[in-house]
Image 1 (tube, rainbow, N blue to C red):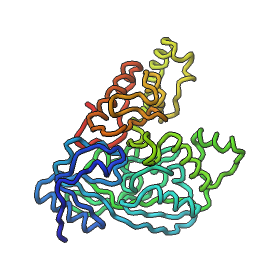
Image 2: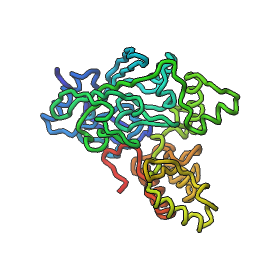
Image 3: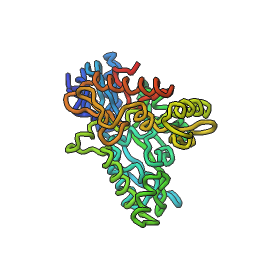
Image 4: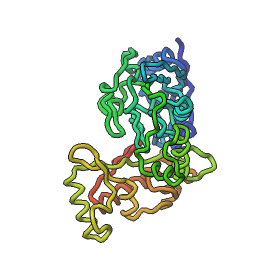
Length: 359
């Protein structure tokens, strides 16, 4: 198969944040053989490779990418019954939200709370995408990937993916080593929607709905996300972002106790109960990054030139028009340092950085 990449292709328009420079070389691939050929082309010419999906979780440098950008466009969805469950397989280039809508319409439970999230299917296991009480790691049973060096295809079961909070082997130990080409989710036909997230529970309680359908749960999630400008909407000035820029920190209980004592002494709270915290694994608590940011003095809409925190919530850094990656990183560093100085807690970014760093 012959690969003929285009040269000097602008990339900002392929990202939801709308920043970043051009690709030195660019190739769109529609199937696994084309992907293998593109990887081989890059290896033969010693060109670094960047795999691009939906661009919804990417901060790209203003200089762009100096090698080959491979834009995944692998498509295809298939479902197979497996006893009391159904296995839903989707290619990496499928848009995520339509897949969730398809499952909800079929009455297959397991990913309904992940509605409204932009991006492609291939990114979901890499990030262990999650929201409103669900993570994809709860339903993923297989990830098919291609080894970047050998171009051999391999299938990883759930345990082999080594999922963690917004983490997997594909984002840590094997970062850059594999390209995800397909994902299989095991869903529950006729199963109830997950309502573990308090805001969803309140949404239905206020409406007197005691047993919402999957379609109703999906609609509610999108309504909640829309109120926070967390769905793609060209008419919403707060939607040009990567979504949540910082992960909720998970800290040892002792660190939380020290932080709580500091906060109480400063008069920010009168007891630890007033500080949002949730079980984060044995001996650990998960904290609210949004709460920490707001109480470090950064309010919704806080602006620094061409970038700002969303007017709907403080976790999103928004391109207000004409921003650069440097602008985005400048505000991110200011917020990160402000939280660390105020509370002694380190915030870590959620998006993938290419050619840039917060350090």
